[in-house]
Image 1 (cartoon, helix red, strand yellow):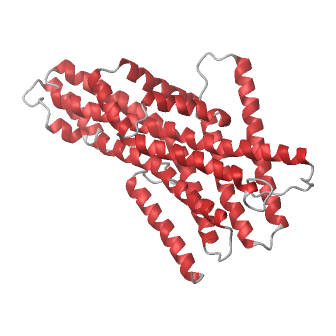
Image 2 (cartoon, rainbow, N blue to C red):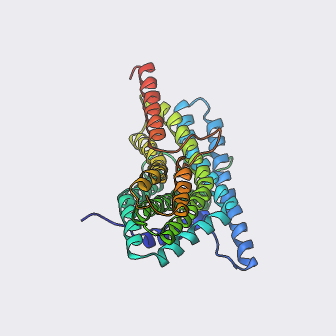
Image 3 (cartoon, rainbow, N blue to C red):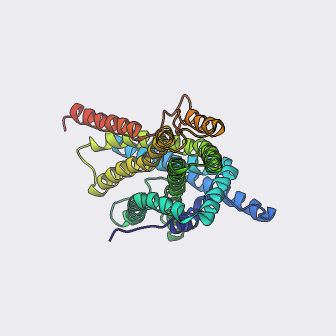
Length: 373
C-alpha cells in the first residue's frame, strides 16, 4: 500500500512546520497586535540567520588558507541565503498567497464528487515525493544537529566567533541559535510544499475543464465551462507570479549549491560526514527544484490541451452563440500557462529541470577531470 498524504493533511503540516519562518499567511481580520508581533518575530528570526552568516564569513576569514573549509561554508551559506529569500518572498506576497490558499480550500470544500476525484488523483501522484522530501528534511536536520558530537567542530554549522566559547553557557546559547537556524531552513523547505500543492491544484482545475467541455452539449453547460476556464486562468496567473519568485530562489540556491559543493567533492581529504552532507545537500537541491518543475509541467500541458478537448466536444452543429464561446476558449488555450520570470527564469518545466540537471553533472564531471579524480 502506497503512503498517501491527503490535501488537508499536507496543508495542516505545512501550516504547522512553517511557523519558524513565519511564511504561512495570517487570516484576514487578524488583530494588529498579532500582526506587529509576527513582524517583530520575523525580523528577529531573520537577524538570527544574518548573525550565523556573519559568523561563517568570519570563519572563512580566520581560516582563509583552508580552501576546503571555504567551500564547505559557502555550500551551507546557500541554504541560509535561500531561507532568507523564502521569508522575504512570503512576506511581500502574503496577500496573494492567502487568496490562493483560500480559493483552493473553498473550491475543495464545495467541489462535486467528480471534481474531488480529479484533485485526489493529482494529490496522490505527488504524495510519495512529498513524503520523501519531508523524511529527507528531518534526517538532514538530525545529521546537522549531531555534527558537533561527531566532528571536531563546536557547533552544527561551520562558524566562528570573535570571542571564546569555552564557558558552557555561551556554547549552549550558540548551539541553541544554530539549532533554531537548522529548524528555520527545514521550515522553509517544508513551506515549498504549499507552492507545489497549489500548482498541482491549478493543473487539476484545467483537467476538470477539459473533461467538462467534452461533455458539454448545451449552451448553459458551455458557458459554465467558459467561466470555469476564466477562473482557472486567473488562479494560475496569480500563482505564476509568486511561484515564479520561489522557483527562481530555488534555482539560484540549486546553482550555488552545485557550484560550491562540486568543488568540495574534488578534494582528496575531508571527513566522511562532511562528504555525506555535501552529497545530500546536492541531492536535496535538485529534488527541491524538481518539486516545482513537475507540477508546473503538468499545468502547462493541461492548460494547452483544452484545444484538443474542445475538438472532441458536442458543440458542432449547435447555435452560433455556443460556437463563439467554444472558439473563445480555444483561442485562450493556444498559449500554455507557464511559471516563469521574464528575462530571468525560463519556462519552468521538466525540460528546464533536465537541462539544469545535465549542466550540473557536466560541471561536476569537469571538475573531477581537471583535478584528476
